[in-house]
Image (tube, rainbow, N blue to C red):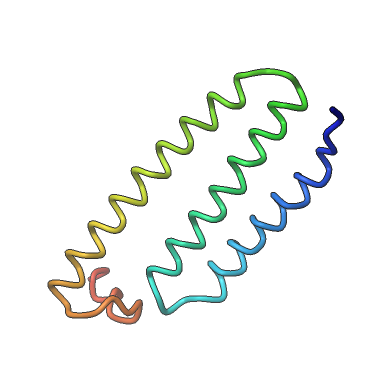
Length: 102
């Protein structure tokens, strides 16, 4: 079975740019920023799997599992901080986060 890897690479690049555009366009909602970051990490993981299959090496798939674990931990930690921030401030607008810098 011949697999066209170029199609998968195009999908991966497309996912990455969707996440990148979502990260730069949306500057008001923290949840959507986290979602865009997760989409970019998904595209990177997808790229690691594609190149691992292309090179015929399992090291890329192992590295993908490590990146996926770190991304899940980052997402859980970010959402926990966001819930605590919402309870303290009553909102998660990015304009009110500027108070944390002082």
